Image (cartoon, rainbow, N blue to C red):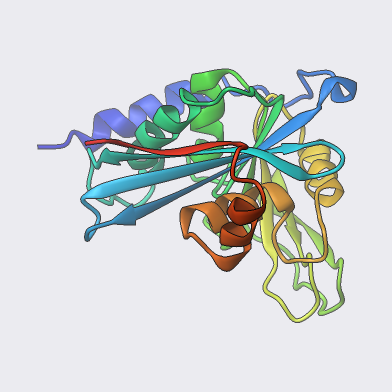
Length: 234
């Protein structure tokens, strides 16, 4: 039986250790990672993909994919416990360590301020940013339909992040700091990694790798010798 009360208490404890200022040298960022987690075989297998991009060119230079047996069922609010084992497995395979990580999911925009970007950032002690495609926590004023429309994401008197329409006629992104990144810098870094799509390049590539999209298949054909592998740990 899963002790959800203990897991929520752990979330609160870990959240208290999250650093919400820029605890890194922005000038030393030469590689940015994107991380994406999904599930296979009706949730029995957790798959994590990490893409490493050179910054500022946003060129993909390495990818790693890990599949592990899922250790926790889906429980609302506790998703990071379900996702981080596969992320750690993929992280352990990296040959090029990034200075900043974008995670497809929430940072502090979580009821207990510990989404997967914050949880993972704490575990590996690397600056992280949550780039989510849907709202989990907080509210904002209505967002205009224009490209670049922006509103703060607020919960009570606390700003958790931003609601940002990154591309016209697309649903907005929900951007929040994960760990060792400030609220303002989280938005600035995401904006600096856009290339005309809804998602920033790090998480767009991670999604393409995880789902073996045509974008990734073309890259593999052109770059057969570059770093990347799939590893099953089940």
